[in-house]
Length: 416
Image (cartoon, rainbow, N blue to C red; front, side, top):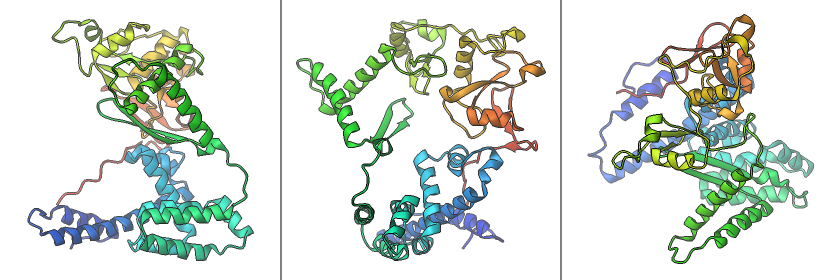
């Protein structure tokens, strides 16, 4: 039962979760643990289904606009810290469940996980529904058949069944656009290392392998005992080095792409054997934490720009004589803000404009104190009623046109 009296389903859910979190598991016998896990998996499926349904309603009613976000996916990412893939899956599942009632009912009963709903979702993409209608396919029967597979077979079997159906829908279709088959995702870890995964079409994959293999085979010193995977990773970094050094890459916000590192002058200059390594002393433009030694290594073949920070953190005050933000002030704003400062947005610096917090025509000067990074969408929002404000402690706050503050969703805490 709930740990607290409840008057609404949401209150009952919160109370039930609190009671579950308060249960002691160490003394549980094996079968009891498995039974508990089975019930929780079903409950997870039900909650995932209900969340997808709620997200779909938010999408239909444009609820995300209340917090200045364009889509429910961006709201989920910004306000609840969901990865892009998880947010997109919720949106996709909500749309699919609306069109596949049998699948939706099975998910709501806890019989089908969100991952299975996501696999079936392409069946009701507009293009596939049109093909099904043209061929006289009964989508309601497909809904029933695929739901049966999802509730009785393995996830791999479900993928195969869906793939077979989609292939039969368009056996003689046009050659797919290779750009629609390509994807690349990055995951930054706490130590600054980067993991990535992706998919390339056959031709794009061949180009990628050929480029990496060329560098790998050209730089195989005698006695190299690294694995092939390690050698390929090194070759990929060398490929990036070559591209950056060529100066032929597109510019980012008026600057050629480059490696940017923020580090205190004292850490950069300290080369003593005891402290010279300076672990965690530098921060890169994409948010990695590196040592002072690595920063010095990069500085050997780079440009060092000194930014003097005053006692109140307001350097580079250029006054009102210059409205446009010069490159050195933009760099200082990027160093300070790191991304779009609108609540719930993490758009990177190279997507952003430097916004005058107090508008130029209202007497605002071109200075670090009066500047903030805003992506194009949120820059537009701020010029149409929304407002950003920087606090003395350096934190940014965002307000709606009605004056209420947009607050980022706090983690869901369960207390017994």
